[in-house]
Length: 110
Ligand code: SF4
Ligand code: SF4
Image (tube, rainbow, N blue to C red; front, side):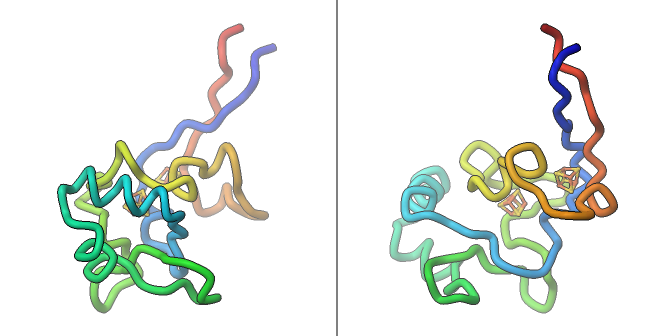
């Protein structure tokens, strides 16, 4: 039997949850380069301090809990999206995640 992994269906639920989209310094640099926005401007316009004040998070669109980088059903920074986004739900998840995420189990061929 192959290993099962969960294939994202782009339901965008995880881009609309409340809370931080955690960014490492390296991820912030990669995003600013990808978007061709100077680092200082990117940090000022697209990030905020995380709730625990231990680093940066992406901001939400004003008046919503939707990530600033969500464009319809696509992520504007798909190629350089942070680990928190790229790793969910296969590399990290939480209890009850299957009730809020539409990813489907796929069996990897050996
Ligand atoms: S960075 Fe992209 S994948 Fe991550 S929450 Fe924002 S829109 Fe979604
Ligand atoms: S909640 Fe799950 S299926 Fe929906 S976009 Fe996020 S990872 Fe993909």
